[in-house]
Image (cartoon, rainbow, N blue to C red):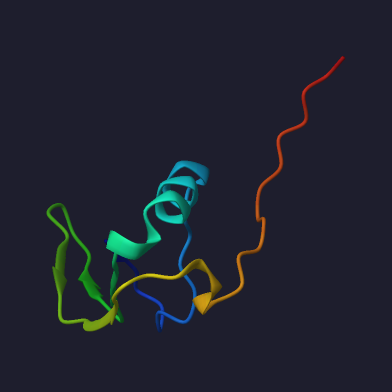
Length: 74
């Protein structure tokens, strides 16, 4: 499950999530709650949102793009 305040056209996935989903695509689903509204304050409140459900989830349903690289110094 992923949640976002954006329109849900893209979500961030960790390397472990992608690996798990690739290995278990036939029995996995992608559930995204998007367009969530956040009321700021000491105790922020989330409300609303729209559901996008892809079942079964197939890695080819979108484009996976790397967004972070780690540089290990030699």
